[in-house]
Length: 247
Image 1: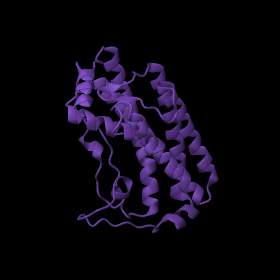
Image 2 (image 1 turned 180 degrees about the vertical axis):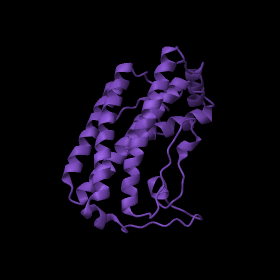
Image 3 (image 1 turned 90 degrees about the vertical axis):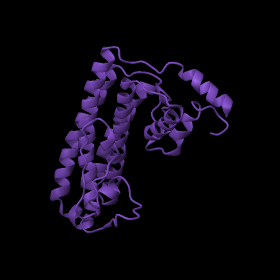
Image 4 (image 1 turned 120 degrees about the vertical axis):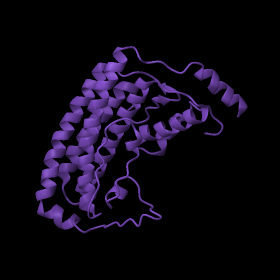
């Protein structure tokens, strides 16, 4: 990456993690924008948040599905992977690639999603929420799930030198979520026991919260796009060219 242009290096971020491709892109372009003091249009920020939350849903679906498969519940494994495939199909409509999207660039995105894309995404997320509701009810009442997850893999955070993050940290009772700094309403779910059961239930609840957040962002994004509020920073390409010449 040190020998390539900043925009051509984005594809490497997709291949560093085959689960969180868009999240890696977001972190990379935000670092560049911070170094170059580039302002991003509000509409592009909303698009990025939508993609980041969809990636969060895909990650949680993968974790819960594979966890269920390890416990012998193959129905959940096949069921939730169907939703992941549907989300990949919708993402493919926006970038042309299912996994290696390379859709975020410094200063914005390569394109704006259409209203049809948003409608497809909301339909799939609505189906996912219904399945998560059923799965959560099964988790709370199923004897096998309870005996194999309660009190297993208990984590304790000492608040001094924690090596946990994300769901692992929140399962110990610490209400930490980087999204609380965003100007959107975020539901921070915390655990009580820090065991495997807590983490599975937290991921199910976070899927529902992420779907709710996506719907709110989509409604805001459609309003901003229709009002013509999509503009890129002036002179951005010139700044990037000067930056590459300096390097």
